[in-house]
Image (cartoon, rainbow, N blue to C red; front, side, top):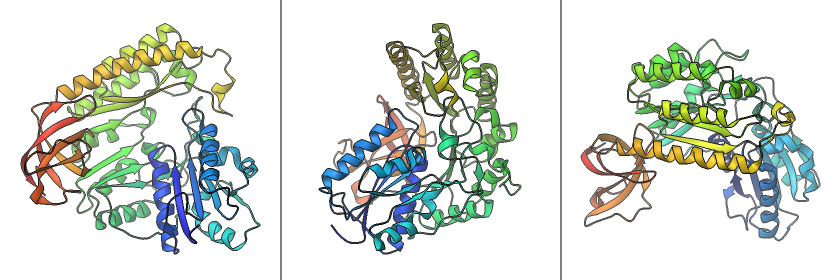
Length: 450
């Protein structure tokens, strides 16, 4: 075991990835070094409770840690994130776990880790929700990757029937605009060329009591105007909160990417009402039509839940019909499963697992069809590619080296570039798309890089 070394295991969404990266940078600033699971003095498990069987995944991870560390009692195990908030001090039943930090408590985790290393017989829980968004300790500044993620809020006020987020991440708390802009400027100074703004319900930014009077649309305008920013994205909006001003920005801001992940969840009005989504299929269609009017080439992706309690075959067919109507380029789809404390967990008319699985397979088959049609339609187009790193595909030919990146629509593109150009990570390249694969595109350089 190396003293003052750490290892972080991350489950779940981009916000969890962002939290883990922040924690790692702060620990480095405090003199820690990143290490392997087998040698780390501090092991952090950053958890997610949204996907299926989250508690089992956490317990499995804790079991792997025990094996990798030979159950060394001197290894400090920290559990953070949504499952930590949900299970709380129950996690102390696992002998190596000495710090449990919930969604707001993670901000105090670095200081707590230092204290626990100095007091080996102590355990700490940081489970209280804060009354406002507390700005976090600054970590080590380092060269950024091509894409930087900046959190603009924490929590959610929607309380959808199936969703545990308000219980594990708390009520909505917006950050101050100045703090968001400061993080964006630092990311650009450190080399980022694209920024993605993060939040559970980003277009409700500023509407809670913690807001400073700046709306989400105003925030986007201010971020988009920062020098050096080539691309701007955000996740995740809620259809009920997306107003005309948010839509219009897709036609107004040149660096706002023509790609939006807009969760639908279901295409049946009856199911949407039981979910508590506060919009119907007609409103969703109206919104997607408005988005395409503002930016005709916009690419839409979505989230879908299959087999929500009470969902009939007719309800499911309405979801398939709405998928076709919207032409989603991609989607994340899951069978409904209970989350403790949510309203839907108390619904009695659950759908049998075999029916859920059958519907999921049919839905995913349709999405494969829609996604492939979207990719095929791109062949022959030219696009600007932000190179994120070397490609796993072995497509290099004489004098060329294979790279991969994302176009403005978020599509993964592989391209061969002259080996003599050196490391192309973070560069923009003009590319002509030549071939569509199952989930990606191939291209050839069609212009200069910058």
